[in-house]
Length: 378
Image 1: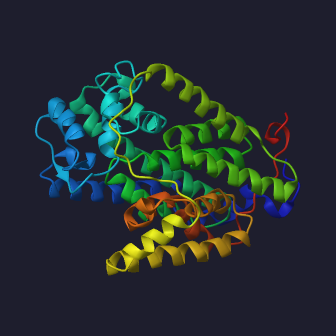
Image 2: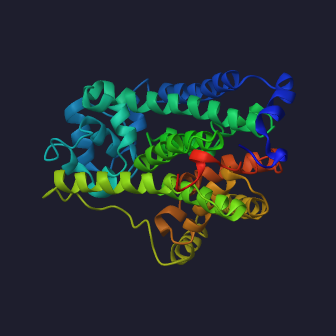
């Protein structure tokens, strides 16, 4: 039951439904946008899906692994990006043969924690490598379609235009994830599903959604924490299970990984992602002076972050409060993330979609009071 009549979602949605397209139509547009981006990339790479694996020319171990399974592969400059590791995991998502697969990961536990995306792309271990390389792309495209639909439904519930669902496929951070077979798309969409379930008063489903997001990218547990804090500030009550279940899922999978990866150390060579507060930013700022384009893009991103933070703290938007912890995370990110606007946009991807919602509908996204199964103790 909703105690504050001003927060009644369904009547608002019904009154304005005639001026907005259905969420599924918006999802079709969003999926088409993503499809065009994927097709363009494939055409650029001669329709070779290994382009999305982002295998670095300076990473002979991972390149050799992919070539043994796929034949010749396309490479990218220097170390490449995350896709090459998710390909390894998707070929053995349960880590049943770590001596053959996981051994080529740079940091086995860190990479292995992000299990949901490669598990889906690998058909839970049933698909051959030639299908896995396509599965990584297809899963992200489907995730974008689902995410667009859910964001459009959230906008509808909050009385805004369903076209706001396009804030998912037009999210520069998520698009960056798409081009390197990253797990961030699946992770964020799972959190959107969790938030949708929460505002519909299904907190167990919400907890499952947030747990799935955390198992795709462990930092997404911050999204659930931000929402939990908002509910506590607003109602002095909180659905604790949306944080507890993701934590249990992360710990359980981590224990499983430690058993399966005993004696497997990985190849090393991974950049430092977390540093002392502001140290990474300070080091990156010196690098930007030699790269004007990176400096300009980073300044733009920082401007968006500052503007978003000011707006978010003035609202009670659960979508925005879920993204706020990622702003705090920036202070301890390493220079390796700060130096590249591409990686920086991926690190704060939830901010971009939330910012679009705040600009378009700043006063229509207050959290709904949870009753019955929505409390943290029932």
